[in-house]
Length: 194
Image: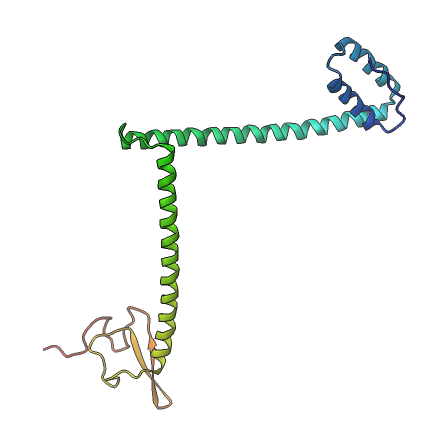
């Protein structure tokens, strides 16, 4: 076994030293390594051994958790791979044997689709800006515009209620189904029947 200088540092260093030796010298026989380990373990006191044991148990738990997470990830990726291969097989069956796509065709179609998405996004953004400007214009126009024949009562309940306030008319919206308070339902004519 390799000759080592006696270690007077705390126990984790000795435990780590034993672990490092196991990994560093694979050519050393197992029986020699066991004998060397027993000799150094017999020189350690009980507290150092207990600390080393607890340290190794903590490392073991961390490694087990990591292994479980990796196994779960492998299972998820395997499931995803199976799903993708199944979907690919369905697409190939749907396209038929004549229309098998090569990698270049897929790249070209992907680029075309990306360009189309970008064009549609730009167009959508333009339409949103137009919609916003039209809403603003409608709010400004609606507040200044006086409707012709505003003094004539509608023949059909439109859901708008005329409220007189300080000599001018204010239009309110009332909930559907309540009517205008005249006892008639929404949408009923105010013209007498006969």
